[in-house]
Each structure stands twice: as C-alpha cells, then as structure tokens.
Length: 463
Image (cartoon, rainbow, N blue to C red; front, side, top):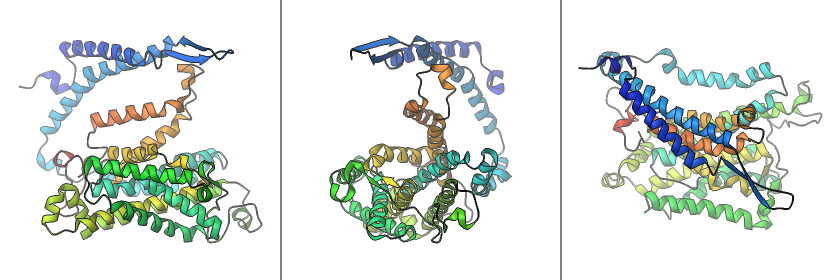
C-alpha cells in the first residue's frame, strides 16, 4: 500500500534526516575540493615574490551551494520525482498514447518562426547598434555550433562512429575559403560549396585508415587526425602563415552587393544609415539557411537506404555485414557527409570573422561539439539544437553577468569559470537526463504507425 508521503510527494522525517546528513557530507566534500582552488588565491608582489591570501567568503558560498543543493535534492526533489512517477504509472494507457499538445505538435514551426523574427524583434527592443551583440554572439554563434553538431550527428549519432577530430573539417573549410578567396579572388558563393567538397574529400581520406577500427581505437585515430591538421596549419607557414593566421578575408556578398561604405554598398543602395548590423543580420539568415539545409539533408538521408545502413552499422556491424550491407561505403559516406557540413560551417566562419588562425581549431572545439551531440540526444536534431542553445548561449550569457561581482567580489571574472559551469551542467544533465535532452526519436522504418522509441529501449541512447 502506498503511503501518504509517496502520494503527495512530501518528505518524511527519516528522509529529511538523511537529506541533512548527505547535505553536510556534500558540504565537507566541497570544502575539500575547493579550499585550494577557490579558498586561496596566489599572486605576485612588486618584487615578483609569490604571495597568497585566503578568500573565505567565496569558499563559503561554494560550500553552501553544494550543501543546500544536496539537501534540497534528497529531501524534496527525489520524493517529488518518485510520487510523480507513481502517478504517471496509474494513468491509463489510452491517455498516454493520446495525441500530443498543440505546442509539442507544432514545436518546430514555432521555433522556426521565432528564429525568423529574432533579428527584427531584437532591433525593436535594443535599437540598431544595441542589437549587434545579441544577433552576433547569441544568434550567429549558436547557429554555427548547431550546424557543426548536426554534421557530427551524422557520424556519431546515426553511424555510431566516435569522431574526436571533427574540428579538422571545420578548419579545412575555413582555410579553403580564406586561401582561395585571397589567392584567386573567388566569391563566397563559389567557395561555400567548394569548401564543403574539399572537407568531404578529407573526410574520405580519414575514413579509409579507420575502416577496421571501432570504439576507443577509432576515437584515438580521429583525435590524432585533428591534431595533425592543426599542426600542419601551424608549421606550413608559407601557405597558412602559421600562428599569425590569415587576415583580410573577403566578406560574403548579397548577390554582388557588398556591405561597406561605398556608393554601391548595401546601406547607400537602400538609403539606410551606415551600420555593421546589416551584415550581421545577413549572416544570421545565411547560417540559419545553412542549418535548415543540414537538417533537411539529414532527414532525407535517414529515410533513404544509406541512412538505414548507417543506423544498422551503429547497432551491430557484424549483423550489418551478414545482411550484405557494404560497410566500407557506409562508413565513408558517413564521414564524407558529416565533413561536408563541417566545411560549410568553416567557410561561413571565415567569412564572418575575416580572420582565421590555428587557435580557433583546437581539440576543445571538438570536445564541445561532441558534448552538444551527446547532451542533446544522439540522433535527435531537436535535442541537439536545444543543447547548443543551452551550452553555447549559457557561456555567452556569462559575459553579461557583471552582477556576480557583487556576490563573489570585484576580482571575480564570470567568463573564466565557463568551463567549470560547463562541466557541472554536463553532470546535471547526465544525472537527470542520461539519454540526453531528447531521449526518444521517431524510427525511420516502422510498421503501419510511427511511434517514438523511448530512451530505455535504445542502445546507449542512440535511438
């Protein structure tokens, strides 16, 4: 018989006592972990001698957050979650299988409409110059990572091939656009598909040596490939200019119309005041179109034989071979297709920045892109987009949180702690949503009726 505490979701005295013990233990654990990293700060005096001084107030805040957070989770959240699970178990099956709500049914249309209206709404709220930061940092930056994550999703989420060197294709696309535009004067619209083709070619080159590898061995080889590309960019100074990078990269144009101060520029042609916002808005809609192209191609490929071959390869390579599927071409097409979208994103990145250097293509970028794919739910385009918004937008939001200096002290720099918060966010998501933000997906092959597959029935959350 279910007791009243479980039904109402309230906490019993024994639960609160256990929550108090675990809260105290979490506080002591946080004290041991942060006493050297947070509680003590080192510096140099005028004689270059190493000095240190304590920050007990900041350390106390970290310990209090850990202790109170653990107490609330054990004492209140866990009982509420158990009661909610029991209530849902008592709901009849026909009500569970009822049609989703209007919001869930039309979520993608609402999201697309919101993206299309994002720049004009931001301009109306913050003004022309004030919108520059929000369109660029919170719009274009997030959409670049959405496109990169969707490209990697083809390799990792659909084909099940763990790729830790995906940033190499991003670099190939960026440097292809930078070098060819400067040396041969080719336009952005010519170099955009060409950069994708060159990146796909390098994806095939990577695919051949790893045809017989899987799991950890495949990850090591792809990681090495990404580092080889980065080291080539650093040391081939005659072409790439090494660590100095390539500057003065031509910008993208709108049907030949440049976004500059000339008489034939965009602003003068349409009688608008001079501002760099117009170029950023153009780039926003351009990367949005590239993201939609990536999603459309991915969805179409999943419904084709090659997409089903990727999913079969992901589930069981031996069974895939026994069915007569050519695993060589299946793997090569996965690497080439994912690399192509990475090349598209790289060429766009070069046009947006006007400057590229090897420092923009370190292993950390591959790790962030892979983390977005995993946290979003491998194989789920919607979940990956949500994860990119949360992770990339969250780190950009830290730059705006100057009020934290009033809490943690004037020396506190929020953006320096972004990787710490990034790791904590990953831990929280993996604890409460181990299959990612979207732990279920619609299967590409179904009998009579298409139903979402729960994450509990999928292998490693792949779908």
